[in-house]
Length: 139
Image 1: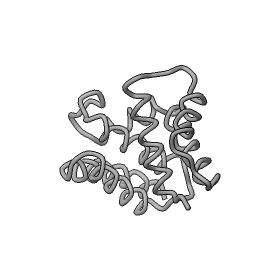
Image 2: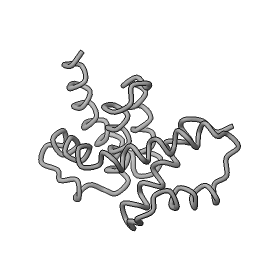
Image 3: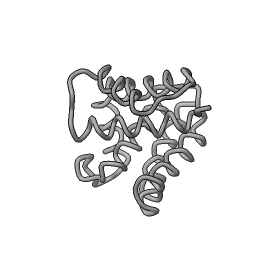
C-alpha cells in the first residue's frame, strides 16, 4: 500500500522532471509517470496529483515566498532537488490545510536528505523554519 510519503516522493520526481524539461501537457506527464510507477492505491495517486498541480498552479507565488525566506538566495541558484522539495513544502504549508506544519517540515527534510545531501536537510529546515514563523503570526 502506498503512503503519503510515497506521494510526496512521486510528486518530487514529477516536479523535478518538469523543472528540468518543461512539457506543456501536465496530465500526460503524470500519466507517463504512473505508467512506470504503478500503484494500487488510488488515494496516493490523487494526493500526488494534487501536490503536483498545486505547485504548478501556484509556482510564482511559491517561488517568491521561498526567495523571501531564503535571504540572499535566488531560486534558480538552489539545487534542483532542494528547490523542488521547498516548493512542495511551501505549497503544503500555505495552500493545503490538512497537514500539520511539523509533519510538512519533517517530510521535506527527509526528502532533501534522501534525494540530495545531508546538508540539504539543514538548508531546507532553515528556510521552512522561517516560513513556519509566518504561519504562526497568522494564527
